[in-house]
Image (cartoon, rainbow, N blue to C red; front, side, top):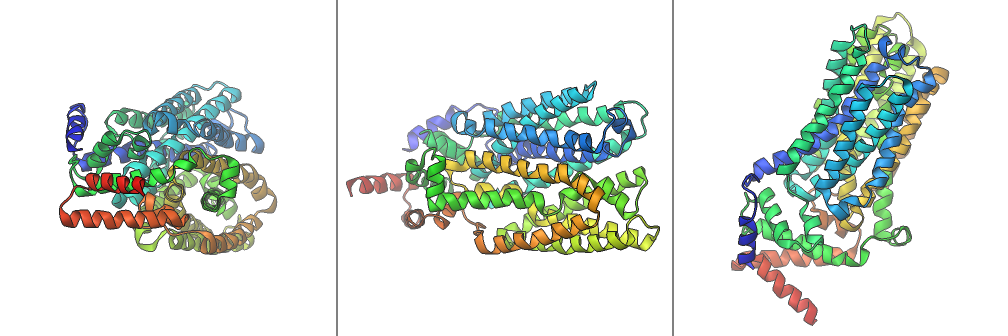
Length: 513
């Protein structure tokens, strides 16, 4: 078995890196630049909604203001659904490439928009590309990064949302004083640079080993695993053990190949996986963060901060603060666990939203400097609480709880449902803030009580488990099989026997039995 693997290694192009540190860094860079584009877009639209050169050019009303921000999410829903099964057929890398190209086209058209119709069409195309990248990107990271880096990679995938937001805040702050339409065209044009970074890094990024194993390409999968885990040494015990576990787990899933909606609904394990994913999608959008992500200017005005320059400065500081907090939450994800991280994050949002509601009611639009500072501070703490847990968990948790047979389509549904839910705060919050003011904060805080109950009761803990071991939390037969694999690996390591050879013997024994 070792000879074919050596030949496969020798066929690899010379430019493909052999160092695990380099390969994993390229994986992170590819997906991070993709994810930062979304943060850039959200922060850019938040800033543009403050700029007179943008609002006056398109003659925006409260309705069209929400449509300009929300149309990208409608496009993202379409992009997610279109790409639902594509990664399973052509691979994670090509899917990410095509989605990124669509996003580049949308960003370029947005910068060149001459009227509101062209701007909306461009943002719709941009949304299709963003939706596609948010399906393919997490799949590639979750299935390719070693376990010790998976939480960091998936968590940081959304942490860099704030990197993009910070870049956008700086750019829009710098162009805000321009009297021409370049005040909003330049930020729109610079948005595509982040996506181009992803495209340029793709040739040096390996394909998902789980996709390769599912296609019967075990030798290539072993090489990819070795690239990521053991500096391209395919004979390393860790690399062979990982391949063995992936292969055994996918063999157990053969009967679940492309399960139908009915099968997912009737199978207890698949049903629970999807229900958890849907709760993550809904809760990540409705815990209160989007009150400040898209309509910070309105929230600050209600709090008494009316100067547009000051609002832009607060936007920059807020993105910087949230970036630091989200990184801290990512590094603690494997220590605290996914459930506790979500509970702490949601509880913080709940408390600070109640305080913001009270301060807005009694001191909103007042000249009381102390009350204004207190309200802004609570906004920082509310957004920080969200960033601590929900920012990394939004992409970290769903691919962990989904098994291979439904991971691609499950992530597609996750992003689609997340974007559908996001349309509620994007379109409703501007009207709600204008009509009921402080009450919207109280309602959102009350909703978070429900979120806490669902997380504590229904979610499962996935920290420090491989994707294959997580399946054991949902299907008992998978848990039993994977325990047997671990024992075999330990025995093989003790006896100095290659795991690939042990797997052959184990498979022969299974067939004869």
